[in-house]
Image (tube, rainbow, N blue to C red):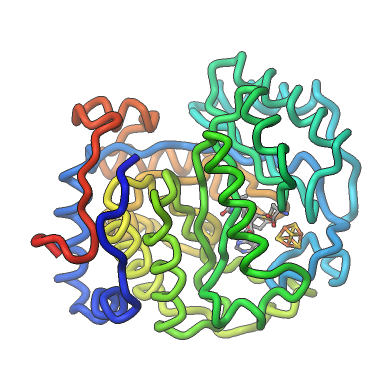
Length: 339
Ligand code: SAM
Ligand code: DTB
Ligand code: SF4
């Protein structure tokens, strides 16, 4: 992963958001094609290994114990069920298996159980990702030792808007976990949510935080808020779909070599909108009928969509190898001549 040469300023990123739509997509396509096969997409399947009953108050989340959303609190899933789900994901064509737990942070005995899951999934030849909440000193290393590839921990939104969405952990707590993940040698999966009621400047503010990480995340999930009845954000105004596409394009331009994942919210998007997201530089998506507690398009519908667009599934490693870029450094930041 490259080092960032220069920092992105909010004004730079806001200026990208404000480009005419066609100009923005054109720039995103240029950047995308410099670094990736624009017709390839990486497929990750999610599994909720520990559902509901979470003590945190994230205003968007159906798994918070504070909101009456109908999601029941469950215990950690047994290893054999996790491995059976991973095998199904692999058989369906996923290349990465992401396991999510509704914890504020994992307890030591939980972490041991998750390490067994990581070992088992890895042994199937799948890439592994987990999202378990905040990590304490040493926990990222334990996961790395079990063979984990990616740790997902989202910043969710801009620092100045964050306090309106979550009060039970700080932005700095999230940055500290991300530092631990990076220092342990794990790949970082970090993104956010569009549609929380943030302004365009705040959307730009999230991208600035992500793009200025040094290095920036290998994987950047861009979620469209899934409004779940019972959460404080249910019934809020949805963002303009073109604004969501713009957010993907801006992520692509500011983080040229990252995998930009078209994440939650696809169930409410039609095929044309998803095609625009790919044109804007998305090259990964969640694949499989379920996200964590909410739905995702049927795998068969996704296979048909990719076929109609002439796109094919690929691993991240294949995408990089194809362009002979593995491990290289482009050093290109906000102030480079091509910006
Ligand atoms: N509990 C852990 C944590 O918060 O880090 C891991 C699981 S949590 C569900 C992972 C991410 O899912 C959140 O950071 C958020 O970005 C995303 N997410 C949760 N609920 C969502 C929703 N309703 N719509 C879109 N994204 C959502
Ligand atoms: C991410 O950024 N989005 C995923 C994954 N990382 C863990 C989660 C989406 C959750 C959507 C709501 C639900 O299904 O509970
Ligand atoms: Fe808990 Fe994660 Fe949901 Fe926040 S996003 S309530 S930490 S499961």
